[in-house]
Image 1 (cartoon, rainbow, N blue to C red):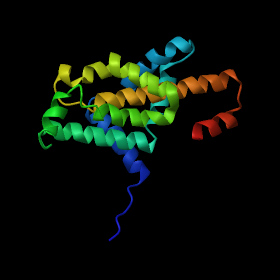
Image 2 (image 1 turned 30 degrees about the vertical axis):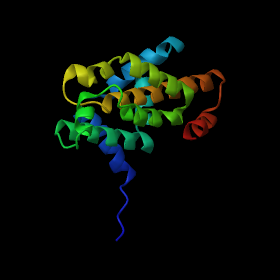
Image 3 (image 1 turned 90 degrees about the horizontal axis):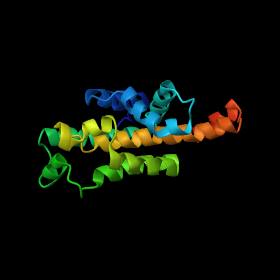
Image 4 (image 1 turned 135 degrees about the vertical axis):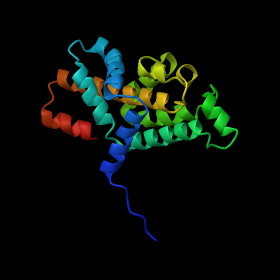
Length: 181
């Protein structure tokens, strides 16, 4: 018996849909990106931040991590996890760490800027990340808040590298090759 592969478009749509279902907009994440990168780029626009978030959401590893995390949050809300995992995820226990591990892993493909930005966002919880904090708003967002931090960190790193490429006057063709790597 062979299973059919799930088409990339289906996975992309599912990842974006799960953000919407959980009350997160691209603009919410873009606002965090603007806060992270604005001090380094006075010409940065919110539209560029939104575009960077959209580009990050096209990466399969990000999509998969987001889908797994949100599914675990939903299962915890429905009390469908086994104990003691149910209580740990539902309470977003500080020493759990699996949520951060998944989100940090999703940041590794975007380099050290993404990793350090993720750490900053995980610690300081700004914007929508603070609103999703399970201990504050109710509901279970143990994995989602960290995944939003990862997506924002990745989009920030992407913009930081893009700025450098623009400063060096790299041609659009060369920039496309670099972005595709």
